[in-house]
Image (cartoon, rainbow, N blue to C red; front, side, top):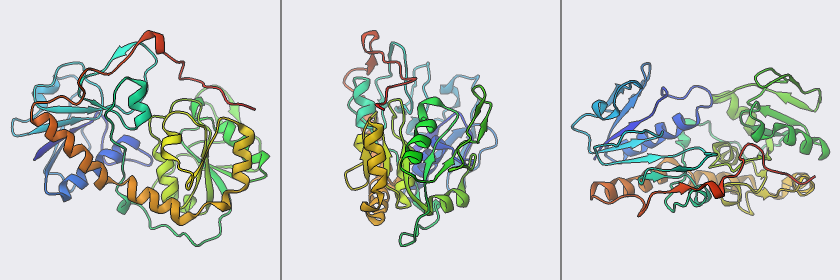
Length: 330
């Protein structure tokens, strides 16, 4: 099968690069399975395993940029124009307004699909060979938060409060002590260390020494790569029960609750979770090979002339929730 993966940002990922890391792992896994992988991505992109890396032009009709030899197109962002080739579109985010999705939209968790009246999803997976090998028998020094700390819905403030009340140190990956991106924010708590945006070996080393991830998000998280990256390094995850979190975090790999008190209590007993169980769960369930095989079934479906959904997913005005800030019990 000749597969064209389309995205509107460059690859490979620089530092975090969520979607970029997912489509990189997907392409590599598809290539390993014997399929011919092509990318249509912005100038500056490179990929050693792809048959070709074509330059994407945001100002040109997408159909004019799709080569004739391609069998199926996999988009990772929403386009307006109808795609003439067999295709699917993965939706990675949220919307906060009435809308109708393309009938070939694929969501990234069961909760994500359900909220938009869809039923087809594929979990994100990562190429774990790109990550440093975990050390699971070491002593751990602190908890961590991983995400864009400047984004209020990620709730780094809540993570800091939970760690402090649990009498634990916290390392923030993805934020700075002084943040001017969304107004003046300065965190004075000395039990918190800020590492900024980190990736690669530096991120792996920080996760290797963490007791667990504190992730009290205040929106419906569609998936959460930070969750599976943390688990891969043996970290249980303690988060709110919004979006995909209760679906991804099992009783053996962490704890979810919208109660700050319950999260604090769970953090205090983080040693009850097995680092090996957390690692094995992430490595086995959320890997690029599993993701690629699930997408291949959808590629075959659209190649046979079927649509992903029987009817187009949608969000009616009556179900719009202000995803900018959901509540947490204190």
